[in-house]
Amino acid sequence: MAGDQPPQSLDDWFLSLLACPGCTARRPLHLGNDQTSLICECGRYSFPITDGIPVLLLESASVLDDTIPAGGKAAGE
Ligand SMILES: [Zn+2]
Image (cartoon, rainbow, N blue to C red; front, side, top):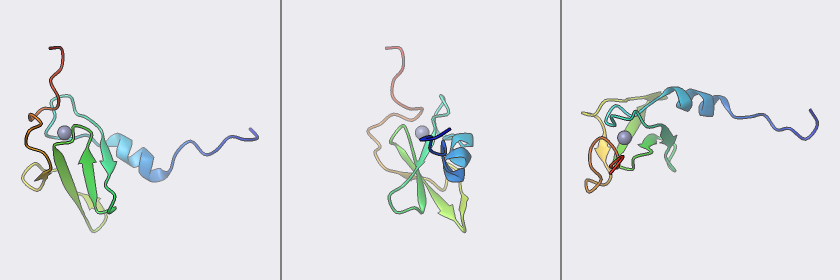
């Protein structure tokens, strides 16, 4: 339809399939500003992208903010 933009890029679609392994809620991930990392929506983890492949392993992740509890922000307090 006129005026419609493509809904999203392939990258957006791909990212929508991924989820943070560190969050019990399996939160989505977002591409970092440097385009070489994926940031969990929880704000705690950053996962590296190696040769274009996201490495979604907690042992490879950087902890961005360890004040955020693992598993994501408290739910249903
Ligand atoms: Zn997370």
